[in-house]
Image 1: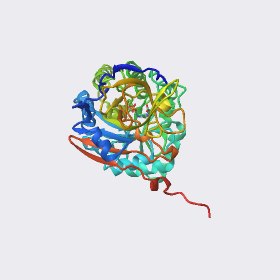
Image 2 (image 1 turned 90 degrees about the horizontal axis):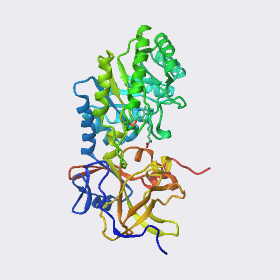
Image 3 (image 1 turned 180 degrees about the vertical axis):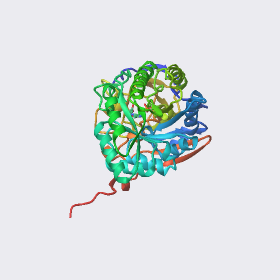
Image 4 (image 1 turned 135 degrees about the vertical axis):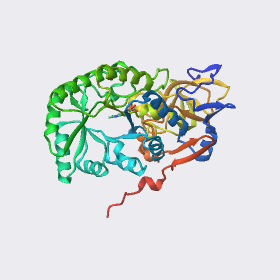
Length: 435
Ligand code: LLP
């Protein structure tokens, strides 16, 4: 059978899309100083591999942009909540944006400072509020009036005061994928900006509540400055209104959302955004306000790859499939958002390349990792799925009873397993037979 897309030319040696910390050395892809084929052999695949230097570089890009300004970066830990990653950011001085009691437990387990934690999310339960009040978080980003009332009640019962920002929905279009756009009227997130003054007045009157800030998060994988500046403008107008009502704020939280390079996007550099934000704050007389940011993806996305091994090459009339040992349960983004991730052969071949769909073994047609990629492959080859450091492992599940992958952190020419591969015993732990 003639394989569609067969090509007698050799596959060009692809270059890693987003990160200088993953590069070819002597014809073999490395993470910093560690060969990825060696890692695959030693630890098996599928395997998430992170670069410690890439984390530090992403952190530094924020610090350089911030300079002497009063800014707290609260890493949006939902992007990658491995304890080693959290510890690294805590060491670097980061705060954390959490969205659940589970994320609070992780932050505390990593030894992070709760006074630098902001608690976001539309569905905080009373037990989660209690845990966060006990820990002493910096602020609750409250997303509705009913939540505000519940928080007031919980804090009052505990004899504590909850510091609160209202997450307002500024109704701006972040120009990103609809599933990761959050700042439009029709989204479930935040309080409509027109309703915010009344909600703030209520907050100021409630027991157990101290109003400290305003918050928004307009979406994710944003590559334009304009939506941020629109949102900031609306937030500053709201602050003007609040000042007239006698409500003063200490901080303004602009959320996360800065995009990274997956394919050919031009990512939004923190400095490009923050220079404009600082200028706007100054022009409006708000440079005394503390700025809070909640970046997730831009701190970790290009610091990780997912290694997977080609099991079979299957040529059909319509398509060529590279069936690999990673699947949608390991990396859900392609199935969920039709997201594009680069695919790099760890040891590129010089034989003829073919157009392949890279798919997993899960029994779903949505189980694909990459489509229509020109690759020269043999069975047993190891591939690196790029830009998998954010929303990769954290969104993994065990569908088809597939144990979750291991995670490893590379540091120079050393590596550390930071999460063991799940075992079959892990998979059935907690299950039981009927009597
Ligand atoms: N703050 C809040 C309140 C958020 O909801 C999020 C992400 C962030 C910060 C961090 O946003 P980032 O800087 O990472 O864009 N699973 C999707 C992304 C979902 C983002 C959810 N919220 C994906 O794989 O593209």
